[in-house]
Length: 203
Image (cartoon, rainbow, N blue to C red; front, side, top):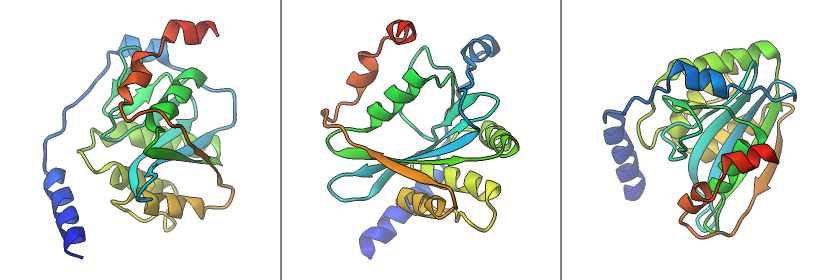
């Protein structure tokens, strides 16, 4: 119990920390814009510790008028992927693939939950993540659950804990789920360092 109180206290302290604003130029965002030809969809990613079972990170991919990833307080960064305050643009299939593989490694797996939605709901989700602003450290689940709570009133509770957010989202009718396991080392920076966007585009 004491450890839980200390953890919550740390989160509250972090909530007051200033968060750096990241704002890619208009031309970079416009060039990167990509819409997948699949249905309008919300995809919740939950990164789970393979040893403890605890949730480590929550993010949200949205396919609407374009496909973006809301990666609150995330560490996924690449010069070719424009970002505006935790919203990543240009989420082509190769970018989606490297995003998930970046997070899956020997100590973590990725729980992937998908839900097809109306075009209107997908577009509202995009507007909400764009308007959210930068998210402080340790608030990835809180930020994502609040946005999902606006999209699904009364069904998603605001939560600091990634697994609770995933649990609530999983109760919405129509959600499908899979898990991605990989066994690379913990230095996940190698995944991005080895990624060649030009080669991925050629494939």
